[in-house]
Image 1 (cartoon, rainbow, N blue to C red):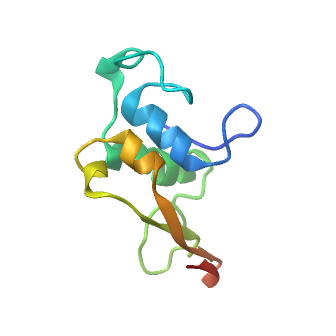
Image 2: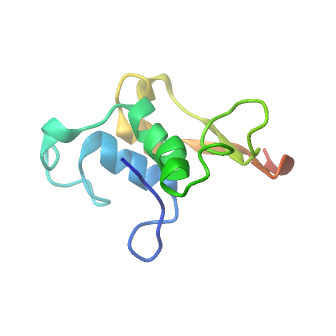
Length: 110
């Protein structure tokens, strides 16, 4: 599976996409219980769809999509609540970007 922030089809903010994948609810929080809740993804799977899934689909999986030696260093480090690991999309939606690195250079740090 491949996820992305393809504006104007989807929000440029990846928190909204991860939230939707984990909760199966839209931006306004509905429907209650989520749309097709049996399709909810865990946090790791949702992140993998945005990272490795997108890199493989784009033909650049050999140099992007994972944090490993020799890979391009484009990343965002998020401050998240522990509830994210337990499957709370709402908790990831409230996450805060703490560090952004592009081409190996820090471009934003809190």
